[in-house]
Image 1: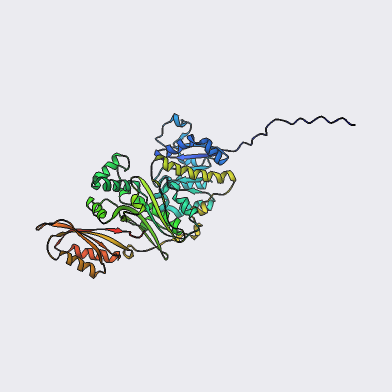
Image 2 (image 1 turned 120 degrees about the horizontal axis):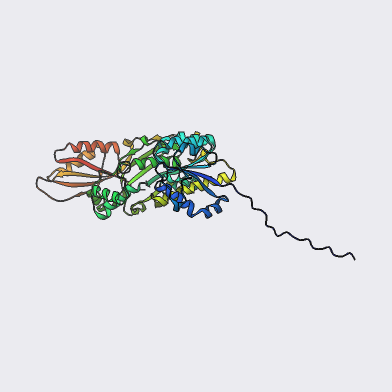
Length: 455
């Protein structure tokens, strides 16, 4: 019998792990949000590598005023002054633009795309005003433009509209998308202070800029609404198409009267699809106190969406701040990096939820044709016939009254008269208020706030 062959020795050497090429990032701007991005990259480096199957590395930071931050690993070798040279470097895969503003952000984003780099940005104003140019360049190059952080801070509304709700037809979007305004209105409502005092407190707390015009006059919310409209309705909208009205003329009296009527005042970004005609407006709005949006206070944001099949859904979270916004930026970085690791093309052609050639300019409904319910406040002389004269003018313009509050009594003095109307066309209301303002028994300009009763 042949002897048994000796057992073969099995090598205990582990197979050599294939070294995966890191994804290299260029950061443009290292202010509050940029620093948050670096912190997340450092804190979650191991988790990000597990998620991607490849490490993330910071190739460089372009910031003219940045000094080394040793605890974040930002040394002199990473800090550069020439952003254009950084975005064109061959060792950079993804460019994160956090400069804000229009230039040099626009030029650098276009340079990055031309050089074959994917882009992540939080720059809502730039995207709202240059969406065709930037997203068009990305689509042509087959690259990604991630912009989750541009609307709602840490609220993942961009990806939700583009992906999670893509199977439904959206009918309306209502957004509390500016934390500065929401903080000011919350202070006025809860602390009983006038607008100027609430603004100063918001500035002291770092919730409002030294020059808060962009926020308090509604322009920031209008930029964000442009992006929401495109994602929700598949049409392009420019900021000049959005009726925009801020909160600087609101008084504490109006806030209190709203509460008496069962409402809370919010700055809402509103978009509705009326058989292809798009309502797009930003203005103070009375929301029923029982509604979910009424309870959104402070720096929190919320976007409330009506879908044809799904019905109503709301997305809520911190709308600003270092880490919430940095979290949204890193979500886009990770999604874009996954495409890079897989060798797939970016999502530039569908970054807005539709192929770029399918995005036509929105047909915007004129504000004069919008139909709302209204809160009205008149300062009227306390004399017989006042209510009748006001009601007569409203009636001649097709506006009917739901309720009336008359505050105080006086002799040869003015008292506030508060009215709530049924639905009326904006054109008719403005014509009626102009006529009422000419009455001798009415002092000053009448005030009004639009009501969204059936959100």
